[in-house]
Image (cartoon, rainbow, N blue to C red; front, side, top):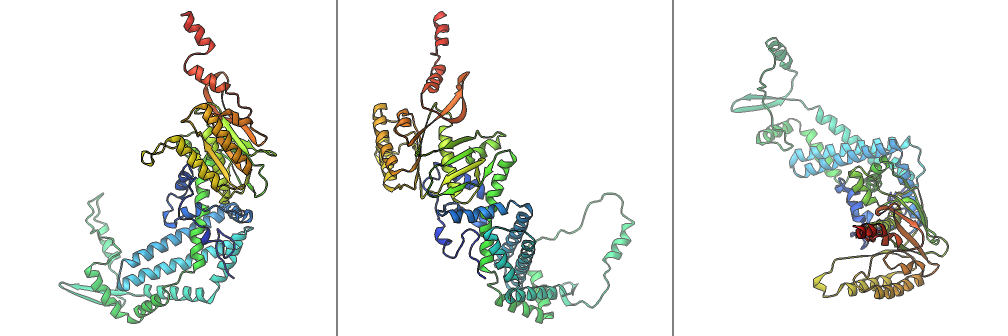
Length: 510
């Protein structure tokens, strides 16, 4: 039985799919914040590269979704966390062993192996009593069960326990007659410590100052302890010779598949732990259906996960939104007043698709999403004086690079481009770019003040950020499906500068 990965099914789908650096779209979509929050506290596993590599196969995504859903079972998740804690402790012991020398180094190594053996044994026992349907976990359980029953592991376990028992049986006496110290085997001499404590107990009067000597607790022995320990090894040469041989023969004791599982399973654990706080706040998550051919995507009650993290810290929750592209619709054109949630909506669209491509549950009650090849983003950037280009030229170059690389399976998300030119030029340029995008027949979200884009063709869908009807200056942060009319935005501006009909009458009357 072989087992390759809990993240990738099959022998050839693993390491080559992991990316060392984040995709270009990460910062624009605030996915860098999501991944940083998800992996915080788990730096020892180096999980970020797993989050940088989206999957492009629906079955590969289903493989991960099955594991995610299985780990929502609390007893199973607890057993995985217990195993992870033991492996973490094992690594600490190994690290301490590397800082020591001689017999002390060997003893720390022995304890590390002992923790490993106990961890594997307990995990196999826990998995054996768990009802599993996940392909990944079923394959790992079968592998781990056979490994735990193998001669290799049985021998490692037997030798480890026997050697620990032998070391625990060592008893010796230290006779101090300054400046001489003698070490010899324990010969059954009585222990008078209990008698001494009992004798002096009668003289105890209330709380007194503690004059007990506090020993310095350090893994590394001082020179006196080293001398005593050296004498003890001479008293029991056979046991310590066995310890030396044990360390030499088992230096490569960890099984690679077990080691890989311990690291990779934290991808699931970290994400589920991260979204637990949002679930506890009443927010919904779902496992989306992924489709490689159908572009009629939708999401119900989706929200920006990065924004939600900031809001929940302030005891608030984000406003959720829906979207649904039907029939020939491919491009969502988002317009409306500033600060109305348009950019957040665009980020949400990108986040949902990207997180879904990792096999993760996504924010929302229900979703069907497209299995993309790449996500391209174009968000406004500050001008860089070093590149000697104006903002308009920079916008055009960036858009050109995106369109050169994009395919019909790509997703493009653009946010407020061409703000540095005139409205007439912005309309002309935007229409030309929209035509290129529609020709590619790819999915796109375009936040823009150019409302003419919303009604270009049957491929465009207009969505508008809304305001409170009674008070247009107040945003609802709801993005709804309706034709762009600019009225709410105009009313908001009029309210801001007190040029509505009502305020003008009041000002003229005064």
